Image 1 (cartoon, rainbow, N blue to C red):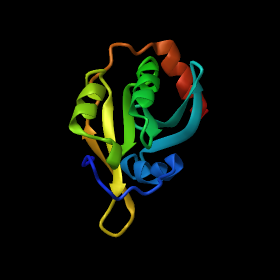
Image 2 (image 1 turned 120 degrees about the vertical axis):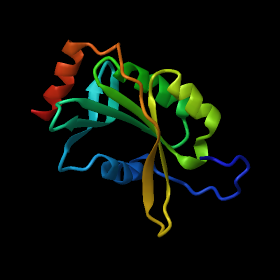
Image 3 (image 1 turned 180 degrees about the vertical axis):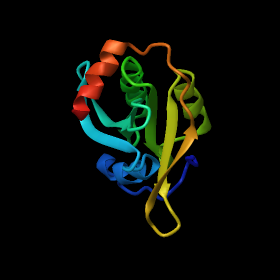
Image 4 (image 1 turned 60 degrees about the vertical axis):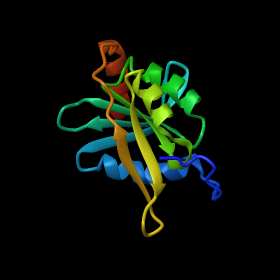
Amino acid sequence: MKRRGDPARAVVAERSLRAPLRKLFPARRFALRTEVSFHGKSIDMLFLDRETRRLVAVELKVSKWRKALLQAAVYQLGAHRVYVALWHRHLDAERVAVIQSHGLGVIEVAEGPRGRREARVVAAPRRQSFLNRRHAHQLRGAFE
């Protein structure tokens, strides 16, 4: 998680967070679509579990965690699990707690020991009662 006052500030592109997330949701089990349109927003990464047919939405942001929270909250209407994925320098315990309080999961992306980016789930999402079958059906259509 972020250490406030950290002097090392590398420029990170949002797209560069995708590859580490793909490792969390491997292709052998999860189909992937990117930039899926939903209620005027674009879900950055939408996964379909090939075994259960459940949907997992991930909103990626490097630093704008509040914007990610607002977007991800909408995705709860159509996805079974929803995560906000953030670059580690912009993630702290307080932000994790706020995101979790909305039923969303949190994924942290950071530089690994060999300079490769790695993702890990910091907090699992709560089961959603907001899920609307019509919206879920619409999102599954992205995989057909």
